[in-house]
Image 1 (cartoon, rainbow, N blue to C red):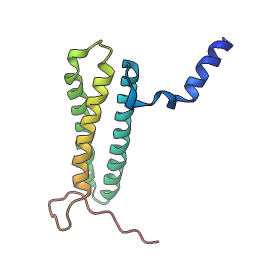
Image 2: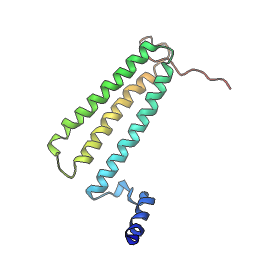
Image 3: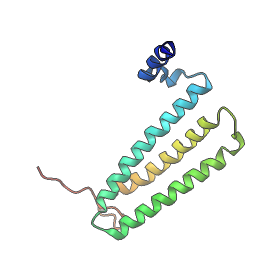
Image 4: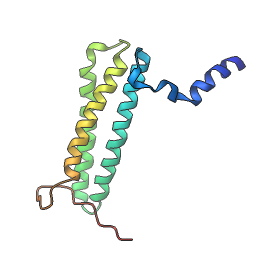
Length: 136
């Protein structure tokens, strides 16, 4: 048992050795790298979503619409990706294809939310107010 721990602990403690996604050439690495790319996009989306929610705190109606839209989008994203990868069920590339789909959908959502976050000044149709000026 000690030998197993000695072999696996370095792999667990330093996962970055397997993170060279530019040179990934086996399915396990490709699956991992696709998952990591999706996680990074998801983190970016969550930061942007939090910012928009903070900017809408003074308007419960619009905040509620944003939250409802985001929940509906998550449902759409998940179902869209399930359909998109349905031909790969059980295949070794299924996790990679799903992560790629989730990443692509997430990047599209980031673009949509960024449009709200960076409306042109004077755009009366923009549902999100500009960031508040914070004084020191």
